[in-house]
Each structure stands twice: as C-alpha cells, then as structure tokens.
Length: 303
Image (cartoon, rainbow, N blue to C red):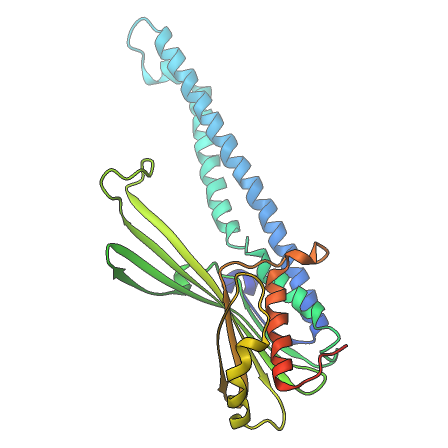
C-alpha cells in the first residue's frame, strides 16, 4: 500500500499488513519523504540566516547614521523608511522561516530505522514466501520526545528522565512455517545535574549526559515444539548465538509457546541500500540472533 502522507505527518507511525515487497516499497517512499523534508528544512535554515544578516546590516547602518549626527536624532532620522522596512521584513521573514522550519523538522526522521527494515527484508528475501503478508509497525518518533517519556526520578544529584521508544514490531512466517516476531526498543537516560563548584563546562550552569541502548527481541514459534523442550534449550542460547562486537546477550525464555531471545547494543547502524554492507551492524545483529536460534532449534539454515 502507498504511504498515507497526511496520516504519517500526524503520527510519525506507519502500520501496514502487506507482502515483503510492498513493505520495502513503503520504506522507499518514507525515504523519499524524509529526504524531501531534509531539503526543505535546509532551505528554511538558509532563509533564517539571510533574515538575520539583513537585520544586522540594517542595525549597523542605523548605528553609523547615529554616529554621524551632531545632535540627538529622532527615530526616523536614525532609521529612515528603507531601514525600517528592511528590519521589519527581515524580522517577519525570520519568523516565517523559523515557524516553517519547526513544522518541517518533524518529518526529518532517523534514516537507519526504515533502512534497517529494508535491509532486513532483503536479507530474508529467500526465506519469506513472496505472497505471505507481514505485519509491520514502525514508529519514527525521536526517542527523546514527550510521547516516549516513561518516568523521571532523582538518582543522587542527578535528575534522570527515562525514555522508552518501542519503535519496531515485525511479525511474519518463514517458508518452513516457523513464525517469527522482531521487536526493537530504544531506551535513553537523559541525566542532568547542577555544575559542581569549579567544574569546567563553558558557560553552562548544568552538566548533562545521555546513556542509550537498543534492545532487539526475537521470537520463534516452531510447530510441534513443546514449552518444556524449549525451556531446556534456553540454557544453551548464549553459546549458540555469535553476537557482533559491542552486542550483549540479555537472556532467553519461553513466552506464549515461542522461544524468546533478547540482546542489546549501545550503537548500531543500517546504511541505505546499496552502501557497504560491512557497516550494517543492525542487520547483522538480528540475522546472527536468527542464525543462532535456528541452530539451537535444529532448523536448517536456508541455503
């Protein structure tokens, strides 16, 4: 299905049940929408800069005029009509540019989220029947946004805001009838505290730091596997999964009849399609978890 641009602008969430090829087409549409927003934002930034320059030039001209007067001038002697018009126009233009930039910036979303979906579906292309629909929910809100704030608390001298952004859910079925679910969640601790006496931090009056992590949760449901059998396999899950650098195994369990594995990483990447696959650490993280889970379950890897 085509992207509903108006609905997406309102929610920054894309929900769809469609084939893999259709979802990839949707991700391409999101990419075009995002890049168009980035270009418009850059143009409005330029407009803001030009308005500021015109305002400064008009002000400097007024200062020069003021210095040249031998007696105290009136407002209209210091700022003749052309200068007043220029300053007024620059203020109005700057306000319009700022407003339009703020409106557009909401659509300038994080590229690697939709690029991860595209790369992952390309990677799994041989394993998912082309006619089988997938269920996708992709949330492109920034993690540090009011919608994602979970709670705040005081931790010693730090005031900490905790954000939890559950930004991806993907459900589907492989050709061998194994059902899968992928959930991606980003957590952020935004920490601030008053500057210690004598601390070096420019002119800032507070010290701040951010700690972020991304959690990938993969669930596989295999026909004929009993929960007790799956529970026994969880003990060997950590050894079966070869994680990329910086990723950490967080646990395995049985949930609703499926085998669940959770891993986290502080950083990941998903370059646009066509760029170097060696930098696609986000895709590698998920595919290695799937590979390890298949090994654990005794499911032959396709190909």
